[in-house]
Amino acid sequence: MPRIYHKLQTAWRLPRQEKLWLAFLFPYSALVRVMIWSLPFRRFAWILGRVTANHEALFHAPAEQQLLARRIGAVCRLVARYTPWECKCLAQAIMARTLLGFYKAPYVIHLGVLKERGSDGGLKAHAWLRVESTIITGGADSESYVKASTYLPRSLSE
Image (cartoon, rainbow, N blue to C red; front, side):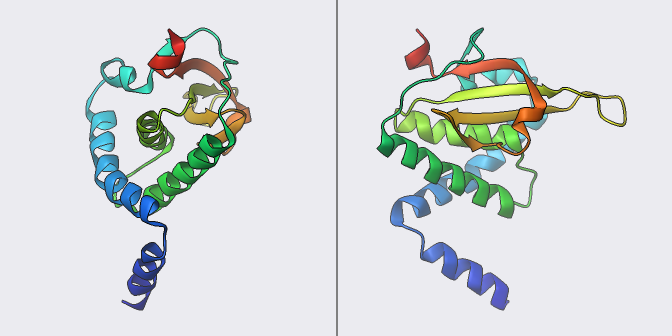
């Protein structure tokens, strides 16, 4: 019980905006998880944005939007750590993309496959979200993956 109390105290000390994001993202992560689990990718790919052939797309973001994106990424990772359901890279990218879209911040989502096949012979996939050159979610080992598709915000890709 003291551990839960400590976690609640820590959450209470977060800035008000981050508490609001936390309150929104926790149930939203469950919805995203159900969507990923139950629907084929093509049915929800539109949420990521507009697919582009330019895998090196990069948009300028002012310093305040970059800071906002890093804060959103931290809250997404926090939510992912404490959900009782699985909340991996694609779910975190969708969660961060949703908040960044609300604030009209530019982002790029990359979906990639591992350069080497896994020990079981299967392909491993990964998703990461970037603002400018900073990886906001899914940064772990993103260099090990070959970019298979890239998504941009619809407002910036037209």
